[in-house]
Image (cartoon, rainbow, N blue to C red; front, side):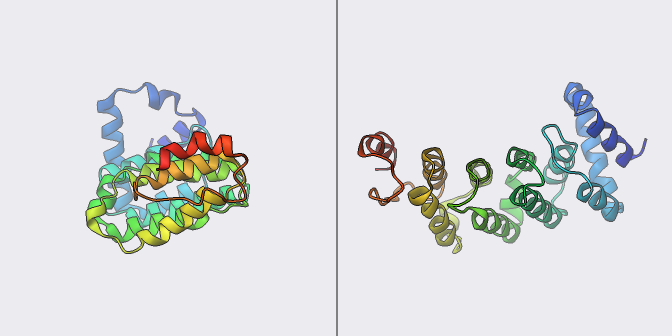
Length: 217
């Protein structure tokens, strides 16, 4: 079987054989994916575009391979991030399936392709909105947590102020308590000294506020 046929097999198999495979075997296949993509970029792109994420998706194999063993395909990974989030926004997939994007290894993107990293965070934070479905916002915040692990304040990325503004708006004004809490947790990756509007109209009660505000003082 060629690479695409193997990916189709893993997709149909819901990753059962992949999960059970030895690390040596999975690493070899990951490197084969990179080599195949280098030679056939349109083939791997078409495969991904025509594959909808689900709970166990072969897309995770592609994303992990291209981010862990290459830095040449980061722009493609950015486009996949946009595609998958847009599918969730348009309710063509469940918000939970955004989690497949957390198989993208972030270290090399941040250290070797900062412009793409900035585009990624720009797009994810722009998708946050107080009127979003709760599950969508929670998955986006989880994805942000994953990508912000690599962020270093000493790098002084100018776009950070925009990211903070978008996330802080959610932390103060989201209708759901869990979304507000998760937004505040995610913000700690950017600035541990942020203060919040404790009188935002969406906060449900002073007693509840006192329980959660202790984490953000």
